[in-house]
Length: 108
Image (cartoon, rainbow, N blue to C red; front, side):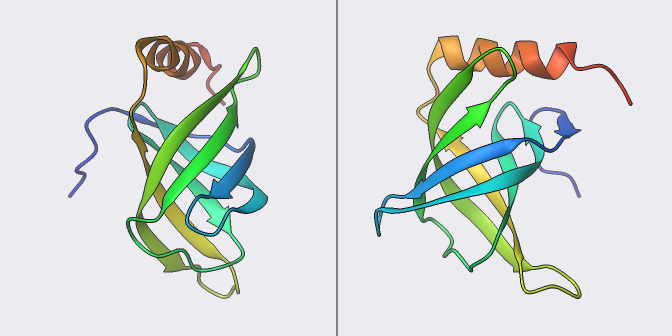
């Protein structure tokens, strides 16, 4: 059952991440985006509730957000992980930018 509060857009774009507990930086790509969070691909397991600072490229601007891991699962036939992130402390301007991006992406 879908527990998401807003619609999700399957989209791939670069994401810069900083695992705040280890001050460990890495770059990855998104799997999807919604107003409340982001799905990413990762080379390593990240524990649930781990805080991250992420920079998301919304084509016309890059926004930086704080997020936490809500789930992390190993991908089938791969050494990589799919990670679900929930945005924390999103200001109104960033909410507006994400919402605008989601509603103005051309459909494939």
